[in-house]
Length: 368
Ligand SMILES: Cc1cc2nc3c(=O)[nH]c(=O)nc-3n(C[C@H](O)[C@H](O)[C@H](O)COP(=O)(O)OP(=O)(O)OC[C@H]3O[C@@H](n4cnc5c(N)ncnc54)[C@H](O)[C@@H]3O)c2cc1C
Image (cartoon, rainbow, N blue to C red; front, side, top):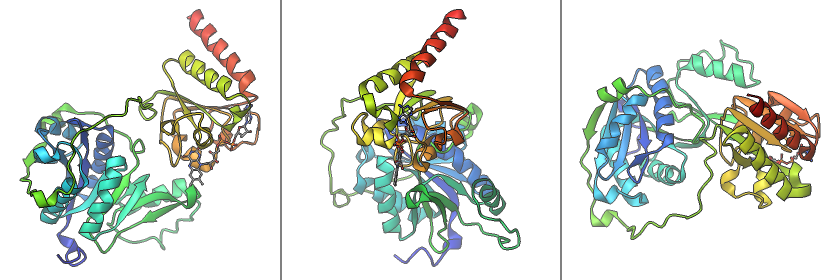
């Protein structure tokens, strides 16, 4: 097979690989379809969801409700549970046949396994862990003006570039890099769960979504691994991405970790069904398991209320929480960078301030 650089003008449409687990679509699918809609409109292209699984036709049209014009379904018992061999073969066959210009994949555990395999087989580039995507040059320049220190000279940047512009943190989050893949197709990107906003579901669009069944060609030789049994971890993972209230703890609780965690739990309850998160220090020190980590190498969250207790606000932490609706920070150091993004900043000791916060919230609730 020749490299995809020879005929890139044959590649059209924006595709999103839509992940299902146990026959259920994932939140990342809806986020990526919503973002893909924006890109497809910028490019004047179709937005296509790609769904692999067994007996999954019934769930496909929901993707239309978030913006997909069409869903291509590859249905086969061998695709019921994810395996690298089967999914890579089927997705690459599909790409080689239909030639999408862009292929977005969620940076989930499955996406992080599948996307690089496919990129290598298709001989194209992959930008991993993106946090921002553009196609339209003017929109990209607006993004640079809003979020960077670059002086955007309209003359210097005057160009009609229709490549997907894939932005991701680089050098430990100290700078953002925008990467393009001009010579190969499809332009492939994995996107961090929780970063892109899900649009409103529209039933009429779901009903109008076109579904295409695509024949799967898999032989015994294609399948080098066989899933005998799926054993799920009994530990319930904390759902930070979907939480409305998150109370995170950092190194500031180190003088009495148990008390700090108990206060965070109590504040969660007082605020109403919140969940406890943490900085990388809290996870590295073993105070919380790694599914609690917020930040560049943890989860990206945008709850209604984010409380940062004894967290300095390093750039890598802020990358994961600064889009929260309301941020409340408690820190003994009035110059802590967390106060730069805080809606309300309280300079004080966590162990003194938090009990007062809990008391006041309870009193306000009782008064109502
Ligand atoms: C590649 C890379 C990826 C990273 N990814 C992440 C990530 O995903 N998430 C993340 O969080 N970090 C990440 N980090 C680490 C990050 O740079 C910081 O080291 C980390 O966020 C610091 O955690 P912290 O704020 O809890 O601790 P510290 O920086 O030690 O801050 C503790 C804060 O608590 C305050 N304090 C101390 N005592 C009290 C008290 N009693 N009451 C109130 N305040 C108090 C201090 O003033 C200080 O501001 C990453 C780093 C790298 C290089």
